[in-house]
Length: 201
Image 1 (cartoon, helix red, strand yellow):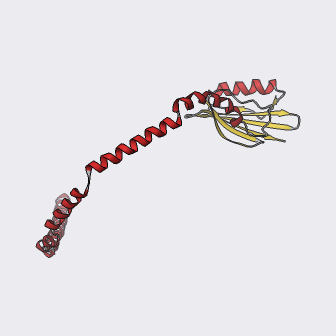
Image 2 (cartoon, one colour):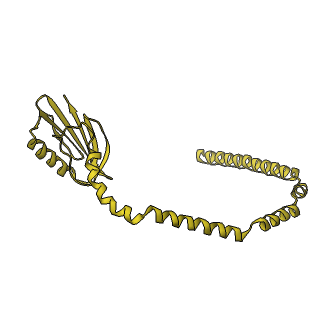
Image 3 (tube, rainbow, N blue to C red):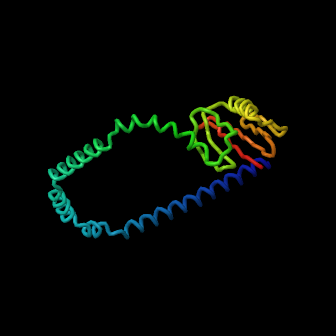
């Protein structure tokens, strides 16, 4: 008996919800029809003067001089050819290897200590002063760590107890007299490794 009562009430609720949605749908349709009848389609068509529009397009087409356009393009191409001859691209390319010798001077900032080595390879300068330097180089993290441990020791630096080597980053701390050098090596997807060196003291 109780199940029948629940079933009847459920049907009543479904019927009421369906009726309510149907009323809303009918109201929306009637409002759309009312808006559509208020738009004066014929008046809109007469406001746009199609004949005048076609005439203007025709006059624009006759004003465009295809021959003058092609002559102008030919003149620009001649000027570009003359400029490339004056620049001498072949000579410029042969001079590029001579510029590579200045790369180390560009990478090492003025006043940066000479007893701090830089890992050889395809280096990218990122920034630096007399006390700090950041650059990127195509190398593995383990290769860069081994390089700094070996080369710093060769130059009289002693590795301190604060050094830490992890999966993606290594921090190496070196002492020489009253100076401290902190070398942070971070593995990077694009550059290989990014090396940051800070000199204290």
